[in-house]
Image (cartoon, rainbow, N blue to C red; front, side, top):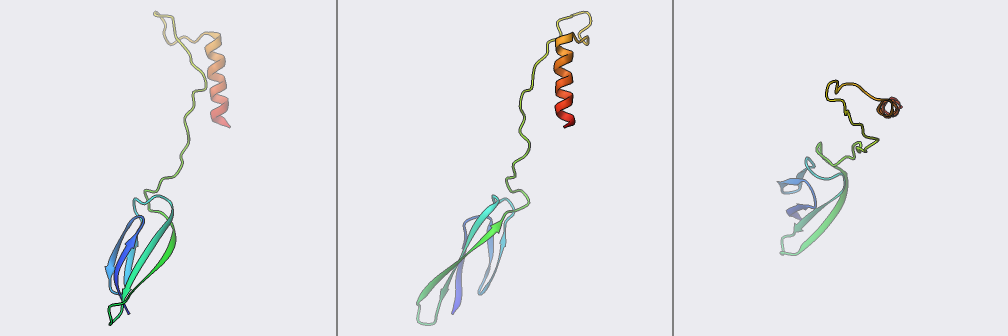
Amino acid sequence: MNVSGWTASGGTISGSGNTATLNTTGALAGSITVNATGTESRGLNSTSSAAVTGGGATSAIAGPQATKLSSCHFPNPVKPWRVNNPCKAALDDVAQRLAA
């Protein structure tokens, strides 16, 4: 029996005959199903599948999530870099959270 076709649910698959290569670059991390269809000399077909776990270099990986911790306004038009006491407390809190 010779393999007459290859398919994959993610990534790209290339090859012919009984050998193929699955490229998972760009595929989402997780399970990818690879199917091979074989045809024998009388024209009868059979399909087999296998699950491959993984993903490519550009797989979706959860990164850090941004959240708003507080806000500050700098109302002094003459010295906008001046921080009042409530803003200093808020900035100190942010610094402590970033250090943790």
